[in-house]
Image (cartoon, rainbow, N blue to C red):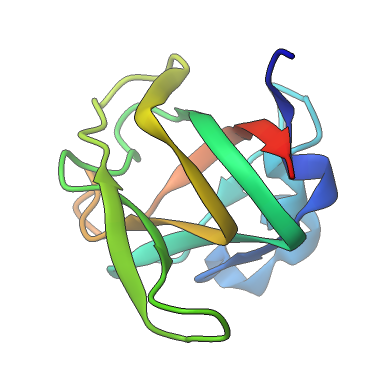
Amino acid sequence: MSDISLVGESQCRVSSVLGRNTRELGKQHLFDGSAETCWNSDQGVPQWVALRWSSPVQVTTIIAQFQGGFCGAANTVVEVPQGEGSNEWHTAHSWPLEDVGTPQTLHLPEPLTTTSLRLTFPSSTDFFGRIIMYKLDVLGKKL
């Protein structure tokens, strides 16, 4: 069975939204399929995007597209909770992002079984720490 997009089944949270303008720059734009809309974080680091599922999923691939100059840097990480119900996160995989405007894909070497996933951007290619992300997709299987 091939991998499917898991984002439609998830709840999303983000670290911040520029000027608290969630209508025009909010997290919903990560999944709307439009090249004209985006999530735009406020300034400061770290920034993050977290997804949560009601039951376990097996993640194999993550795809993200940023605006050049406003990307997560080479120290970006994929994190999972330390334990069920935990608010503490630990690094499951590093994702050395490039400062480009084209989609970037992370194929995980081993499938990751989880109910929560967070992309954390400890730094940004923007001097003020802003992230502008046009697309986020997480591929895998529902368990």
